[in-house]
Amino acid sequence: MSIGEGREWDAFEGLDIGEVDLRRFLDAVPFAAKGRRRRHAQRILVPDRLGPEAKGSVSTQVGFGRILDEIARAGGPLADAIVTTSPDVTVSTNLGPWVNRRGLFARRSLADTFRSERIASAQKWEFGPSGQHIELGIAENNLFILLSALGLSHSVFGKRLLPIGTLYDPFIQRGLDALNYACYQDARFLVAATPSGVTLAPEGGAHQSIATQLIGMAQDGLAAYEPAFVDELSVIMRFALDYIQRDGDAVLSERTWLRDETGGSVYLRLSTRPVEQIIRTMTQDVEQDIVDGGYWLRHPGPNAEVIVAYTGAVAPEAIEAVGMMAEDRRDVGLLAVTSADRLNAGWTAASRARERGLVHARSHVERLFADLPAHCAIVTVADGHPAALGWLGSVYGHRTRSLGVEHFGQSGTIGDLYRHFGIDANSIATAADRIAGGRPIRYLRALD
Image 1 (cartoon, rainbow, N blue to C red):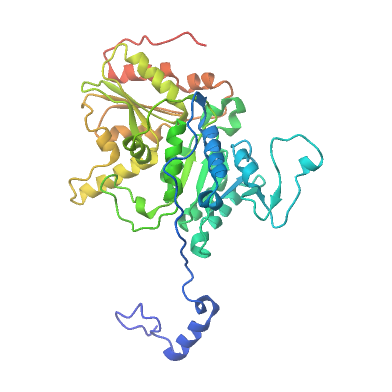
Image 2: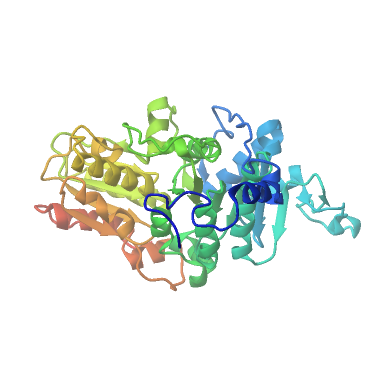
């Protein structure tokens, strides 16, 4: 091919056409004529606090809707930059309040048929060019294609958009190819998948999800979170709306060993299950732990025999089980995992760094487990595949029993299904007894 040694990357090496003529032609083609095609947009400031305070029993899905409604009500650059979209389930994923305030997008104005026909409806279905919600049919693949396009607007058009998509959690798998390529192109968006797991028991077996936690952990360019409480969700959404705007260097943080400055997209796995909210003061340290992936809801003592690590909607069962065990065991710990993805990614990155000679490298989960006695056992519980948290025992070699869901299709109440799959409070306490040893199993309660 007439390419000289060491000249493999010279633009015109080996060509018969003169370099001057060829360069003149290439400079004039439309692709290059307008100069650099990748554009930039200014970052939009995100307030230090998002959403109203949550009290009583509230689900994370309801909390998500309230946070967006509060952003819409407050207005300003942040609210103006958000574009929401959903395939078929706008109202049932709690986008209704946002849509009522911000309207639906269409190239030309369309009247609200319900209102014009005098049909009672809690929703306002007014379409127009200023609308900020794009309504899709039952088309999850189209959802991720649209999120990809909206999530590249800052680069293609120099205009910052903050795309947020919602869908039922199991149907992420309908659009995996488009989601993968969206992340590959470095599109920036937030996807809220809700309801999730077998916790949506009243809706039947067809909508139950098992593998989505593992998808969130494995997908490059996507930070996955599964909060249990609305104050956690508020912290995560505040982080997410900033995170999807970042474009810094891929430098590993020596605090978490995550490449947070590069940014990326965010996946929230939410639930429709109301959970009694914790009344607490959200300190900066707790906020940081939530963002980094986990924090101690009950710190283990120096002689801890067992700890429970949970994620998402099974929080009440984990809390109840720890309370039951605390009658017989001292120093029992309770770890709230807000992101198995980020805990795992930080741990593997820090391990790799140590193998390369950076002996001081410690990830967030390693610091959380630093004071656990060697004899301490770990019970993990998740409404999803047990492998999502099963790796926690490998951090320092603690014995681990991982509870989760490996099959779907059963119908019943949440309590029925939790007992069936062994993720209820009794099952957690029993697993702790068996793995920690030395205690009789006496936690069985009368069935509801």
